[in-house]
Length: 373
Image (cartoon, rainbow, N blue to C red):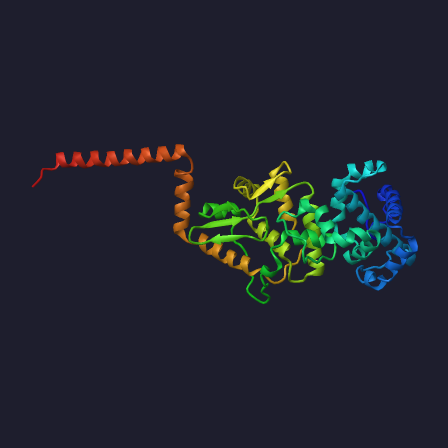
C-alpha cells in the first residue's frame, strides 16, 4: 500500500514516494554510526550468495548492482524505521512516515516485501554498534511488532527468516509442543457445519488461549472449545501471506493453514458465523457477517493440504461420531425448542403441570364412573 521492500515491487510507480525517505534514513544512519557507504556495500557483498538464494528470480529485471543497492537501502530503512518508532525519536521530516505507520507495518509483513533477517542482523551491528551490545535486533523487532505478539512470546532463542515468519511464530504454540503431522494416515473431514453441530447438541465455548491451534473437544460433555479469532480489514491479507509462506516453505508443517481449513469446515453460511460470533469465538470487525463468511470460505481456495494435524483428525472423528448419536440430537432438540430461554422454560413447566393435572383429573373421572370391585 505504501512502501516497496526488496526487488518484487521496486518499480511500482505508486510506491515511489517513500524512496526519498530511504535515502534520508541511509544518510542519517551512516552519520550516527560514523560509517561510510563503502563499508555497508562490502557487508552486503559478503552475503551475495546467501541473498541470491532467497529470491526465485535474483534481479527481477535489474542490473546486479541495482539489485544489491535495493537490498542495502531497504534494509537500512527498516532498521532505522524500527529504531525511530520504538525509541520515539522521530525527526521533523518524518511526519508522513509517522502518520502512515499502520499501513507501513502491514506492508512490512507481506511475503513479497521481505529482506532476509540475516541481512538486517549484520547491518544492525554495523549501524548500531553500541545498541547491539545491550539490545539485540530480535529484541528491537519484537518491540516493533508487539501488537502482533498476542501470546507475549519472549524473544529469547527465537530464530526467524523474515517478518512474515515472525507473524507465523506469534500464532504458534511453543515449538516443542507442535504436533507431528501424520502423512499417509486417513484424512478425516468434518461432516457438519457449526449450526448443524449446535443442533446436534455440541456446545461451543471460547477459551482463554491466544494460540489459534488450541482447539479441544470434550466428547463426554459435548463441548468444543476454541480461541477467539478477530477479523479486521487487514486480517485477510495477513492470513493469506502466512498461508502462502507455509505453502512454499514448510511442506507438511502448515499449522496455520490447518486452522483455517478447520474453520472453513465449520462455516458454510452466515448462520454459522452468527453462531460463532454469538459464542465469542469470532469477533467480526468487518461490519458484516456475510463478509466474514466469504473471507473464511475463500481462504482455502487453491491451497494444498498435505498430511494432517493429528489433533484435528481426532476432533473431526469425535464430532462426527457425537452428531451421529440420536440421543444427542433429541437432547439438543429439547434444549433448543423448550429450554432455550426463561420464558420457554416457564411455559414448558406450566404445560407439564397442566398435563399432569389433566391426567389426574382423567384418572379421577374414570374412578368415579367405574365401580370398584
